[in-house]
Image: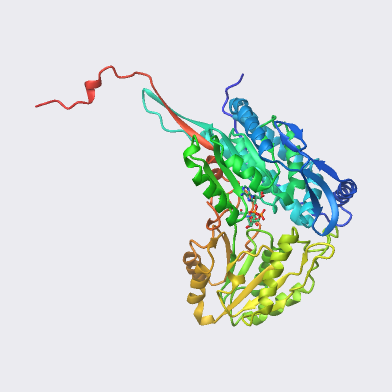
Length: 543
Ligand SMILES: NC(=O)c1ccc[n+]([C@@H]2O[C@H](COP(=O)([O-])OP(=O)(O)OC[C@H]3O[C@@H](n4cnc5c(N)ncnc54)[C@H](O)[C@@H]3O)[C@@H](O)[C@H]2O)c1
Ligand SMILES: N[C@@H](CCC=O)C(=O)O
């Protein structure tokens, strides 16, 4: 067996395909969508590589065509969760002993399968099950997921290389052990790539995982699980355990061998989980590592020197792509009075062309929101604004859940900088604008900095360099990802490491070394080649 020091080259980001009319990729994807729609599937739990059917089932539907059932999915209860934990702990023994290059090879192969034969399946599943347009689906389920697998492999290799200094007569080494126990990966509905990343990054570091996907993303997430199996992931390394958080969560978080939580989702859910861990603290063998990326109330701050055309584009794409269901979605906008008339005119002009509907029509810019609960929640914010004397809905506002959960892209203008829709995460295609007096930029910055408890993404639009520098400084703690003259969404793995602080999470930056290092428990080993035989050596001599 060779003991060479293996390299993994820094990867390139997977390019998004164009899906132009008549292109091969468009024809092939359309065929796969038709096939997948034609036959509903049954989704089991996958524990230790075995399919388990509990008989307690839910359904996966198409959000933009809600009567269409894509799948029946089996749901785990406490019993299956316990079985999954045992399987993860047992599989951990072999996985930990597997050389890191072989572990990473599984995920590097998975990335190749995504770029190739699995691309259509993951894209079709994401379009149908999560109502993503083709561009959003390919950027997520194909490109970002492949990027996570490739970049994380590269980062694990980089970490392995970080070794302490040795001195003459002493060899110092750092061994990167996985955590002692298992990791709980809890994933959100809105990104297939996040579904794949949260269980796989701890697994790359040698951990075994219980993966609880979101109930509204089980369809695409199941295919990610199947992909990993095809890529050669050994049984029990990642255990696919769909189920209600209230059924699965307490069993997992009550287990003494819980070693870490890798979470992405709402702030409220994360807080509940953190509290549960705190209550169980005395029971754990180790302090569980808790990594959570949560909600956002992402801002766009325009200076009077902003390029208004770029600003209009950024508001539309930041607020409405994927129906505003991105943690990074632009949700509150601060605009100086003198440029607002131009911005308003441009917004209304461009939004007149935005089409919402079935994502199988590639000319639609938006699909439906994820489910009835999301629809009801977003509509309640629009109704609140409609009834308020402090707000004016200048575009959109229409909602229909007749065939699917459709909400028009909506722009609210408010006179109250603390208006409810300026403060709370809505997670739908709704953006609120507050117009400030040109000579009150300082005051507006203070509002931007302090209005929301979140600090995930933000954008500054300005051409005046002095102003850019000043605003960037003033908003130091307002966003973990800050954009200058760009939209608040669409971070690339390896290029703009992603995550926020305050109520937006623990900011370990998904798809970065910082995140990977959380799934490792380093052991420092010092070996002395000529151990001392005289303990008195260190004593001072009496004069
Ligand atoms: N910061 C980021 O990187 C990022 C990325 C994507 C989404 N998000 C956030 O995620 C949210 C949207 O996703 P969502 O609606 O799926 O979030 P959610 O909080 O409703 O659900 C997230 C996951 O937690 C599970 N869950 C719920 N209660 C649980 C419990 N008690 N124990 C264990 N698991 C439990 C859910 O079943 C789901 O799998 C938004 O707030 C968004 O901002 C953040
Ligand atoms: N990383 C994504 C957002 C993920 C949250 O939903 C972006 O940068 O838009």
